[in-house]
Image 1 (cartoon, rainbow, N blue to C red):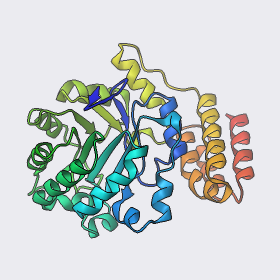
Image 2 (cartoon, helix red, strand yellow; image 1 turned 180 degrees about the vertical axis):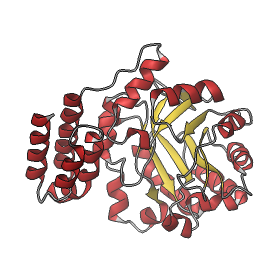
Image 3 (spheres, one colour; image 1 turned 90 degrees about the horizontal axis):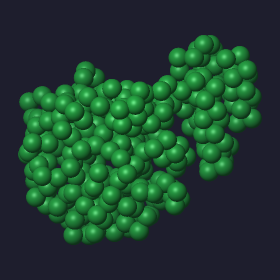
Image 4 (spheres, one colour; image 1 turned 30 degrees about the vertical axis):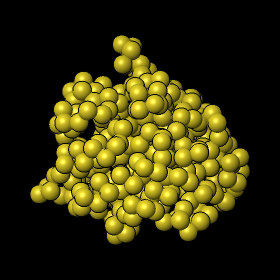
Length: 318
C-alpha cells in the first residue's frame, strides 16, 4: 500500500475518531498491526487561535509512526496554515469532509462541505500548496439521498492534488444508520486514479475481506469495529494471508484492557483516565459473562485504583 511517498506495510488503517483515537489508543492499535494510525480530528481554527486542546491532540511518540493528522475547518487559508503547523509531526495529512456531527457541520466543516464542491476544491488546492506531505481526503457519499455527489467531490479533490480518497458510503443525513453502501466504493475506485480507502461497517475480518474483494479498493479503515477489539486488525491481516481469524481468549482481552488503562494513566494522569477509560473498559468486556454488572460498577468507580480492582475481580471470576 502506497500513498504518494508513504509506504504502508499492509492495507489496514485506523480511522480518525473524535474522543477515541488519542495517543494511548493509537499505540494499542499500532501494536496489533495497524499500518497507519490517525489523530482525532484537529480544528484548523483551534490551531489558528493557539488552542491548548488542539496542541494536545497532536501529542505523539516515535513508535506510533507513520501517523496521519486529520484537519477540519471551512476556511482554505486557515486549513493551509494548519497543515504547515502540523506537518513536522505528521507523515500524512487528511482533510475531513465527512464528519456528520451537528457541532462540526454547523461551523461549515465536515460533511457540510459536500454541499459546496467548489469550496472543497479551493481547500484542497490551498493545503496542497502548503505542504509536501501526502494529502488525503475523507468523504461521505453526499449530504442526503438527493445529493449523492461523492464522485464529483472526489474528482475535484484529485484534480487539486489529493493522493488518496477515503469514503464512508453513507450520506450525512443517514449518520450511522442503515447499511454502508459498498457499491459507492466500487464506483469511486473506478472513477479516480489514486488509492481508495473503504470505511464504514467493518466489524469483522470477513467484512474487510469482502469489501476489498467486492470493490477493488486499496485499503480498509477500521473505526467502530475496533472499539475494545484491537484484535480485529490482526484478524483482517490473517484472513488476507489465508489464515483463519483467531478470536482472543477472555484472559487476553482483560490483559490488554489493563495495559490500555495503565498506558492512559501514564499519559494523561488520573482525572482524565477516570473520565475517558470507562467506555474502553466496557468495550473490552462486552460479551463476557457478567459484563453488565461490570459496566454498572465501572461507571460508578471513583478512582483509577478502583477501576484496576474491578478489572482484577472481573478477571478472577471469568
